[in-house]
Length: 220
Image (cartoon, rainbow, N blue to C red):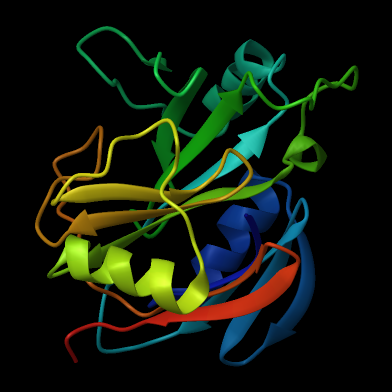
């Protein structure tokens, strides 16, 4: 599965634009009074302005699997990388054959750079914003993970990620290229104490040679 487009919300459009352009070096592909879109590798990332919420999301960027240390140094000069356990900043997902690190954007969104060793994406270029391959994960909170998962399987032909057992409070759907992370609302987003909450999220995904639009909403 590929996440071709991701649309989420921000209540601070000006500083969001500044962060993703100046800190992550992403190219702006569209700008307007009510939103801004960036090129994050092969994914178009769009922020829509909202005034009556302060939404927090969790999403991840795939990076070349041989560039984790270089990416860590690059980001550490621009943002504070958080601990995943006391004194350790690199998460080792043995079952997923991947390693990653985490940091916040200006909105408090939890961002992740992840190196997946089963993908053939080695790079010989110096790491910078152009090295980002795509957005590979987006977290979506739901009141019922089991029902949401069944709906995505039956209606959209998505599959449960082979590396992650399906649970009633957490399920990953897709593959190494793109994952939809379903979490029960009010579960913590790893590695933080921030609770997963339902917020508007819109994706355009490529799956089994079909392009589909998935849309999720808040309680409001």
